[in-house]
Image 1 (cartoon, one colour):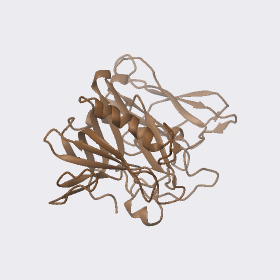
Image 2 (cartoon, rainbow, N blue to C red; image 1 turned 90 degrees about the horizontal axis):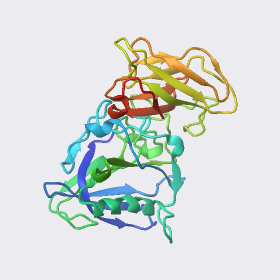
Image 3 (cartoon, one colour; image 1 turned 90 degrees about the vertical axis):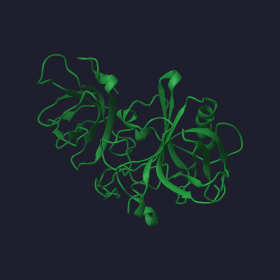
Length: 336
């Protein structure tokens, strides 16, 4: 069963607490919305399933159309529908970041800047120090727990958000939490710099190839990894707003970054609405580029969107996103 109370908390950070590396530790954040309501965000820093160290990625200049869909800063809790075209997160389908850039970190170690708690501290402490910083936490809500104080920060009633990580492709007893467009994450908006910072977490035991309806792990395909690391063909550019009158000639450019040729027979591109565009059958040489012309229902909107590369089995190989600001300049090619 997918998460019952998925949504996003929009608030300001006022305190934080580290829980070390014992048992099932979390990095705890105390937040308060514009109405004075207190919340606690419990961020996992250690997995209950081996391997125990979490995967993480930080996008220091996060640009994605979903930032334009978020509720107002400080507005508190907002429930989200788990479907595309909303502010709901999906690591697999939303092209929020390149999964190949994820790395592992231990939860908490002696020393400085060498563990996941240190990494979270770097960004959360900055948000605490900047009253204008807007914090958004995606996950599952718990509480309000009437007449029960929060177990970490003591405010009443206990209230907050957890499951701030990938919430699909699980195994074992966590498989029941699977769903699409219900992933967790931490976004911080720094208005003075007109910049977004995003932190995304996942468990090493989770799969990156999941069913579009259930979020369950898809059966392994022979010759393919169960995670996206090391993929050869990538989307490197797109012309989403061509010059001239409609119908416009949109293009997507692919690069074979591997040392071996890749047969693109049966491969496809998908737009944000999941309309698919067959890629011309070709053998792409190492280091070679291929520009694919848009056709049919495949459409790259000028208000921001995503582009996904699929192999003949329909599995995601690579994906990118672009914002309305990036698409605003007519005739300009966006590079990724």
